[in-house]
Structure formats: C-alpha cells, structure tokens
Picture 1 (cartoon, one colour):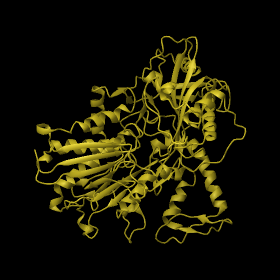
Picture 2 (spheres, rainbow, N blue to C red):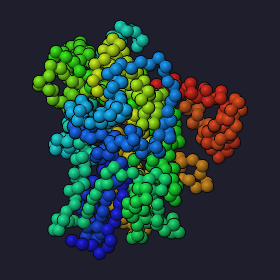
Picture 3 (cartoon, rainbow, N blue to C red):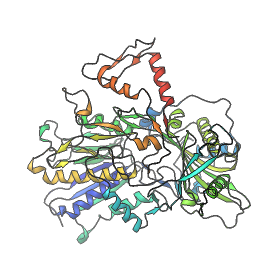
Picture 4 (tube, rainbow, N blue to C red):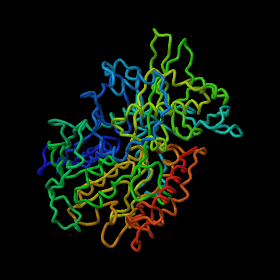
Length: 637
C-alpha cells in the first residue's frame, strides 16, 4: 500500500503516559479512518529515560543496570530543572548517620569502588519497585473541563485489567494513618493511631507501574507492519535522547504566512530537532508531552510565543487560591529502603500495621499502601514486597521488606538540591529525617526502622505533581474542546496532567484528546473553516493577562494529597495561605512589575499587575511576611 503524498511526520517529546497516549491515538485513529489511503503517518517519541519510557509512571526492575559513571561523578543532564531547585544550605551540624545508612548512600553516590554492581544490591534483586506514581484511579472532573469526562480512560482501565497490565487494590489495602480522635496530639510519644480504609476503586501496575507504559509501547510498535501488513503507519522510539534545551527545537516553517489562517499544513516540515550537534530529523508537527524547565527552554526561542508562555514553570508546594499565573509543580523526595528482620519475625513496620488491623477487627492485614495523615513531612508509605509479591530466599532465616516513602511537598522544598547529583551530606540529612519522622508517625522508638535498613535509594522528584491545571475557555466551530493545547499556526501541541488533572488518568486523556484534534485538523483543514488553535492565552497588545482565553486553577485534590489525584478523603485538610486571595487581586489589578520596595531596605518584587497597575511594593519586610505565610500553609494533616 502506498499513498500519493509524502509521509506526515509527528515528533513527540516525552515518553511518559501523555506522550505514549498521544502516539497510540494518532496511530490507531489514522488506521481506523483509513488515513493510510491518502497519506502515511510516521510517529517518533523521544524519551529521556535511560532504561525505558514511562516518566513518572515507572518502576525499578530486577537486573536494572546503574548509570555509567565517569571520573567518579554521576552524569548530570537535568541542569535545566536544577536551576529551580537550588540547594538549601540549611545544614544540621549535629546530624549523625548510622553506619548502615552511610554505607548504602556511599554505594548510591559511587564514592566507593566496586559498589557499582547493581546485581549485588538488595534493591536490584528483590522484585519490582514503584518509586514514583503509586495509585491509578478514575477521577471525576470538576475543574470546568468542557471536553468530556473520563469514560474513555475507564474503558482503557478495563482493557488493562483484562490483559493483566493492571491489578485492582484489594478492599482495605489502601488506608489512611491518622491519630485517633480524643488521643494525644502529634507531639506526644503516646498518641493513639488508627488505620482507616480509603474508599473507591484504585489500581496499580501488575508487576510494577512501569509495565503500564511498556504495554502502551508494545501497542504502538504493533503498527509497524511490513509488506501486505503495512497499513500506512509507522512508529519508533528514541530512548535516552535529550533534545537540547537551548537549541534543540527550531521552527523551519514559513514565518511570513498569514497567522489568521491558522493552517500550517502546507506539506512541508515545520520543525527540526537536535541533540547537541546531531540532527534528529524534520517533522510536520511537534508535541510537547513533558513539563518543567526543560520544556520551557526548549520552546523559548521559537515563534510560538503564546504556546510557550504556558510552559513557564514555577516550583512550589502550593498555589494561591486564584490559581497562580504559571504552571506550578511541587517537589517530593522518594526514599526506597529495604529492612531486614531475623528469625521469621515481622519488621517493626509490619508489626504496627498488623496491630492496627487487629484493632479494626480486620481479617486481612495486607495493607499495601498507607496515606500518612499524622506527620506533616510525609505523604505515603507503600510496601512493594506485599504489592508485587516479592519472593523471599528459602535458604535465609531473615525476611526482606522493601518500602517506598514519599515526602510532603513542603519537605521537598525545605531540603531541595540538585536532583541529579544530591550532595552526600544532604542525602544523609534527608534520609535520617524521613526515617525518624516515619518512626514518630508509627509510634516506634528512635532507630527501630533506621537501624534495620540494609539498602536504600533516595531520589528527589524535582518536577513532581502539578498544583494547578490550565483551564481553557477557547472553543471552536466544532464544539467546545479542552484538556490539551494546540497552536495550529505552527503545528505544535502540548499534552499532560498539568492541562487536565494531576494523575495518570489526566495525562492519558490529555494525550488522547490532542491526538484526535491534530488528525481532525489535518483531515479537515483544507476547508479553512473554524479556529483550530485550542487553549492558547491571548498575548496581544490589548490584553495583559491570559485569562481572556483561560486561566490556571488550583487542583484541590493535588493540594490535599501532595502526590496527585486519589479518591477523596474526609481526613484531608487544606487551607490556602491567608494572603493568597489578596495576592491574587493585587497581582491582577493593583501592583505591577518589579520596583524598588518601599517597605524595606532592599529591592522588592511586586505582582505583575493589570492594565492600570503602577508597580508592586516590596522590600525585606514584605518578603519576610510572605515567607512566613509559606511556612504556615499545610497540605494535609
């Protein structure tokens, strides 16, 4: 089979759920519609993952090899995100680290020769380990989205269950850890604990969350038919490829065309991609399916200014009540640790969980995941050994349990550092604080957990969960659309959980919607009817804010949980900082720009302001007050 036109080439930057969903839908819809009869479609995904795609929906698997280390220094390639995560120098001179923790960290940071053998590590031989995304649910959208609900994703979940890609959490296996009503407060060593099962359908990747993107990858690869089996689609993935943030994306289309036409499809490629000095090819369409500073910089030198304005990123554990001006991502520490118990005894963690289950008269003490509500620095504890049925060594008298512990966004902000090269002293401090706070949360004695650790891996999830989402008010002649961004003038789109919902479901659905829209645009654009750009802010001279075509809105569920969308809980509490509402009004209407502060000796930074704003007041005093408000804001209790 062959068509009369040259293939239409689409490049997708990001091999996470959003990018793979977009690729899957492009290929399947093109085949179902018989598009191969008129034009061929080539889809290429560029993913930065060293071993496999998946992004935040990934797992560590048995046999994974460590990165190649040159000159005893880890390879650092995410400098674009590290700018937003400058090291916090708030060091604790009294910090002492047990020898078992110190040795495990030395192995991770390659300060000792011979510790780079992954097969010798407990964490690399036990089984699948989920170190980032933990739970999949099907959210009910209530963020004003006009593009429909999650019915398509629910169908995908059902299909994954049938094909053994997903597994449903057993009832009662996801619980919340709270202090029992009427018991002592958090500071007391004798507080009474309680486990409350979280209601709602929840799922996880069978054999690891990373098996979900691998299943999506296999589906995309199935379109690579040959000979009589070729139907006009082809797919490839470029793994461990970093498109240069400074000059990796170049627009090569016609800059002089009539932008009002909003039709870029003149048959010629619009974009060229590069990795360093190497060309990665030319493409008709470009999809940005990742976020953070890298995405911001990649698009910063292109003519798609309105599109690029939405990729600007701020890192913070919360957003103001009016939503904020920029995409805001939190930062979370992920600590995977293995603890050893001897003589067939359960670990200290397992004993506490079993006792709490007995108090609830529960017949099943297999609690896979705990949402921690009684310690403000922690969010989640998950037992990979239970969830993924790790096999124990039959010749050993000891048991190994492997857990994933996620910090709160506030903790991630307080102890931020360069995520690809965390200093050893910072790692020691973070690990000890996380384990100590876990012991306090579980009413354990100091050292009960930390002294039992035999291996660990600490990771800073720098660009973690969106605290707000972009809600578009744009529409087309074909009906309201939402959940993605598309600039038809330049043939570039964006998909991700930051546009729809901070969850695996939001990422998947955003990618699917964008793919549908892009193919519809290509197939119907010859009519030159309708407005095909979707979700772009208005940056004309007559508008000084983005809200004419949309705005960022806070994600209440992400602010409450700190780790993304999960079923709602009566124990989750979140209050916006007391100044957030006023800040929003002043930034949008009164104060504007950067000016010398009148409230202190230094230079203050005011809000950007509205049309009539003169400039913000600042100075040390106002900045100090804002910092105090930052510390007072709490995500969950």
